[in-house]
Image 1 (cartoon, rainbow, N blue to C red):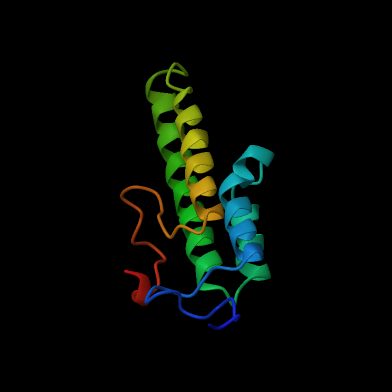
Image 2 (cartoon, one colour):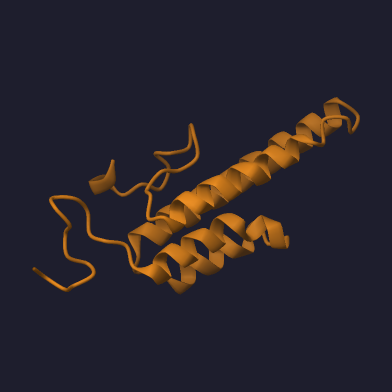
Length: 121
């Protein structure tokens, strides 16, 4: 049996390294530190050789842009009463971040195909 961490596992994709999982997690959780767009960009730059990190960083960037836009529109339409919708985006980021840390290629619903490598789709 191969000890190479990138070797295919039982006919599946190569195993994801722990540092890749951590960067993917940090890309998703960056809004908690008020770094909604900076965190995923840093992850992209730091781990540009990792398809896993690229996928999750792009997912986080797109999700943060969409959720910021939706939250702002709802906030304006409802005169501020719809602001709690932002809590749902934080919960979504935490959930997908935890999944990414577990090595999952699952992304956000309706955005799952964005940034996905052709071999994972």
